[in-house]
Length: 582
Image (tube, rainbow, N blue to C red; front, side, top):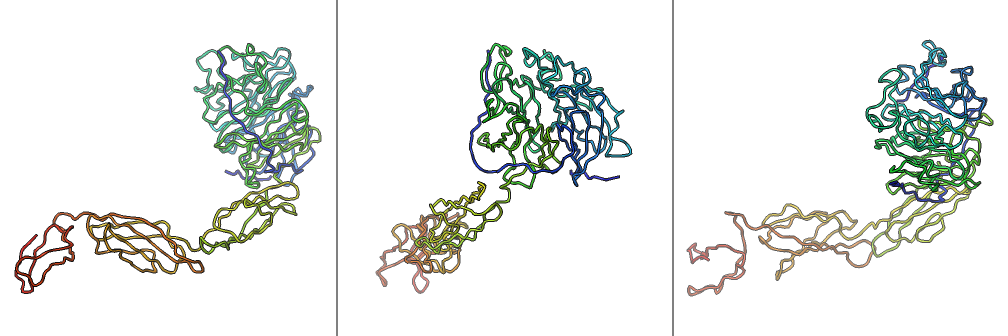
């Protein structure tokens, strides 16, 4: 038996989205495995295996060596005559490694939705027990289409289930909060039998079905939670005009109305079709029903893997009919979408493995693919030669490009188009490297001055007669520190250090400061100016100062100079006789 290891009046709400046609990242899919019949979902149990859901009622395990085996067969219970019916969704309990529970969403032979729990075999972790079915929800479906079908556990530990509006004419169920169709449900599978309703669900103890988490959806075929942030992304299949992607922040308390059927995407249909007074949340992204967009959105996941760093944080989704594919990146400045063009049609679902890598399945050819970034290994590094001094321009940047597909082209912020650049002054230089298939990487490098005027000047240890001046090493051989008080004579200190303590200062005095240095190979001196104040004398603190007393000898009358900062002085003659005080 194989063993696997777990890695541990109506108002509108708009979420702004900006668009770009950036070539980064460069999305594609790479073949992984075949041998599946109408795969419609991919799930992970938290280990190395992927579980592939086939619409006819089977779940198969895809192993790391790309072989597969049958995990569960409930074909006899699943009604799959219509293209939107069948075994539609699979998710594993967060504590699956301990309890062995997993959950499926399928339509039965009467065409109605069943959400059930199954258990893995007690003796073989690669085989489920088909007799362990425990039904949580049975929901009548008025038509064979718009069944939804996706299920995921949120970061709160509750099971979220997506249901379409039931199809058929009118499609009025989405705005009716008394039924479960056209909604995403939120239930506690551990809190009761068959389940409990979380106390903070938005319609608990108010008008509306207790299980509702949000509503106003047409057919939310695929939704997912960002594994890092907990945000919910909902791809809702449109009707006649638009396809859309909706978004719910992780901090939401639920109850969003995503506006079907008074809006289709961001296109207004009729406000009378929505509940009066409801706050409507419009999609963050929609696209038209044409071949520049598509006709049936397939939602995906936010990439949180490690193989493709440029793809990190991008929500990946596609159109089932046209194969047009996009990603949306949510940053502090809002949402940005990147269009990749046609990759492959007939992609019915995406899945996320235990390492955050994203996979896709094609229900037409039965293939499983790995979603990749063709530009993921393109990188640029550089060896930087600093400029000698502020007055010179002899810096250089020698670039090294790796990955991608040669030949490369270069576009520097200073206008250069060569790989390496030279004769540079100090500053920031940004380069965009493009390869032969359109991949791009942008990097910024900084050229410094090896020798420059003093920076980071700090003045510490201030007393009434001394201070310590410090600064950064700027590459000079020596420094001249000059200080002077108002009306005084400048004092000059030469030092090769980057710190000097000035003594013999006058208390309570303002000094101007200048630090000068000369850079090798550069004409002139570089100067940094500053100032400081010495502290006043404290009580009983003594201070030595030079005074000028004249005439000498004298007849008992004399003049004292340079005593403006002296509080008191006693004058003695050479014999020690007290001549007087001031």
